[in-house]
Amino acid sequence: MNLPTREEINLHDSLDEKEAEKNFYGKSREDVLAMFVSKGGIYGEDFMWMGNKAFQYYLPVALAYLKTPVARADEYGDIDWLCNVLSFRIEHEGKGLNHSFKDIRQIAQYIVTHIDEFEDIDVEHTKQSYQALLNSLLSLALEAK
Image 1 (cartoon, rainbow, N blue to C red):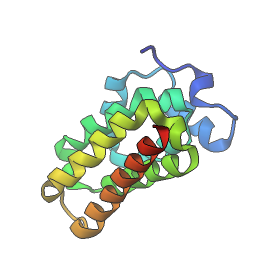
Image 2: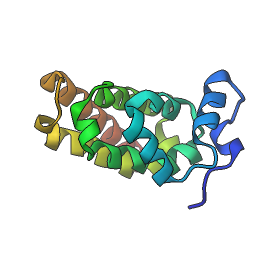
Image 3: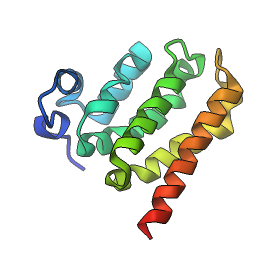
Image 4: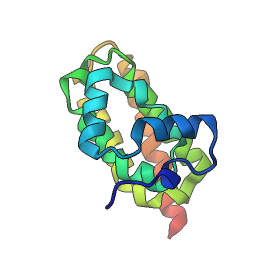
């Protein structure tokens, strides 16, 4: 998969999409992972607003980031923002995210199974949030059949 174009990041030229374009355009997955490791979830909101193709391209970075020591310290609320972004996109785009379902499922399953490795979080709340995310994915998958 090629790097997303400006138009694939910024579909409607909104302020949020312009910010995502500024932060992500021309950057590889490795570049974006380095951004996340250096500044945590500060770029997380951009995942909410970028176009589907860009979202699909960069989403594997979220899982790679979750496996780093920086994410485990959860200084920026990384686990919460990610669940919020994924839930928002599923709610608003549903089956339109079908190319990202596998990555979303892997992220949610990773959090649920590794929850005790993260610091400064409400374990039960976070686990319930990601389980709800998995249930939403399952519902969408069943609807598609």
